[in-house]
Image (tube, rainbow, N blue to C red; front, top):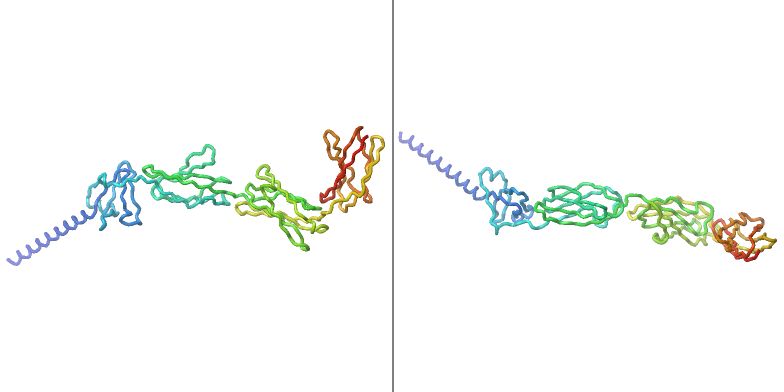
Length: 383
């Protein structure tokens, strides 16, 4: 009977010890954790506990609860909110002198598009990182009646494709945190998604004397090069000065001309073509054209004329293998214009009878070959 009472007393003692141990652990846990309730604008510096953990700022008008523990240095460390809830902890508020307030705007990191970059597509990755949750917008500084366009709300990053206009783009990015601390970032870049075009080259066939022409369609030309030559004397290049050698037209078209010395190729056949490159590195090559080279000017061996009343007979003796035409301009007329004398030679002679009005006449007679080489001579007479 006495032994039974001893066992009962032992069990009661063990139960009391166990209860005390639980209460002790609960008191330790309660002391280790705290339900910290921040007011709007207050900030808890979790980064002081671990630099890899972001600080938290309360942006709600109704306050923000955080379950925390303390490191050995006294820094605030994040804990699961469920721990504080299970312990039934009540809110602890920061004293005014102990509170850290968020007065700094977020830092914006723009990954794409990059400053001064040239892109070959209008659809670009628009990739942004910010250091805290923010509302992010962008503004087109070159667009008439532009307004702020929302990218995302309450976000710390954005990574999607967006379309931008052809040519220069200049935009401003705005990021505002929950307390309206705002940061801005400007970026300008270029879009050239249209491939360059060469719509026409001259001479198309026949003869060349050294003057070449091309019509290009490119709003942002960077390099225009004429290639010409043959296997006998080699290929050569001539780079055009686009601002000075090209005349802008409508819809991005420009007319460009180049003059080169073809005397080494006189009497030979050459190939020529143009190569056009835009600022984005897109390149187009025109069709190769074969032409005969004639750099020798026609020679007027003699120019005689005789008068019969109002009629004047012209006789020109010309040396030119590739004769094209002989014409004249009467500079004494009110509106001088070019008129034909001959379109072919007979045994090297051009002969034509022309009637003139009464009075003094000052003529410029010109002989041209098929390559465009020309020689002129003045004639004066009175009818």
